[in-house]
Image 1 (cartoon, rainbow, N blue to C red):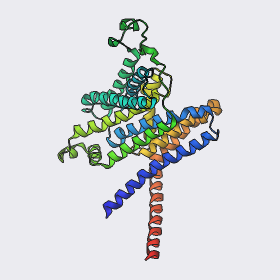
Image 2 (cartoon, rainbow, N blue to C red):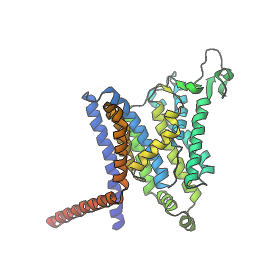
Image 3 (cartoon, rainbow, N blue to C red):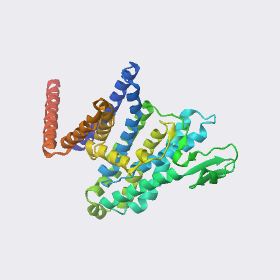
Image 4 (cartoon, one colour):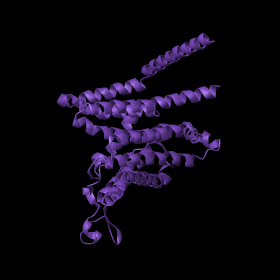
Length: 363
């Protein structure tokens, strides 16, 4: 009976998260059709979604697995470039745009997961600060490699170089797809707000169902006490790799959205550097470590807020900093946590009393 109750509470909590995203989407769509959202705010809708997806991915690694990763911008970069190369090459063919974009998602996710496995094999043997430093370094390596990469395709096959486009030796009339620091120019802009919300919902569904599964319980057992988990027969390496690779794949999906929301994709620090990884970590921490719904809410607030405050000019970042501090205190201060618990307990008690009254009235 208690197990059924727990499951129903968990399911209800997940439905609240999905419902919140869907309701916000409907409200935004109504405002868009009414012409009440300006072009500047419209341009933020897809970025909010892909940063939310990446925050959910990082929260799986930090909140559920319990390992601090600072390389998720690197996984975004891998997903972005792998999918953009495919879309750029296929946009001149007769393949439907929807099918091309779907395959681009599969390619971006698969590429990020493969890199996740390659990185995870040596990295997941480390813990704590050491893991954070190594993942940070891997993220920077990925970004700089993509920035130095020259790639082209002609009838002879794929040509790669880290020196210059001249060394590709492409056939006459064939331009490189990836042109070093200039990146990929002319990628199809297939992403939109609706697709971005669907990807966010799928990411939430995957992560929340993983948490509720047997594998998820094993991952959380490793987080809570690795030695005890090993003693009970849990394969620590397997489950750490599982969580890390799924997290990398979801971050890769965020990268696909990113690359298909712009016309020119470049691998620069402002888009895929360690500052971006730290920014996503800020979203996770302020939203609540292990709280997927909180990650989405924190990302939406903190990404859009600077634009809303732009009219304040030099006071904009001052107000933004105060909001960060207030959110941190509300989420993590002991007094605020106790107040929140008491409030929820009172709400549940009133809900239980109302349900009991209804049952007695029916009887």
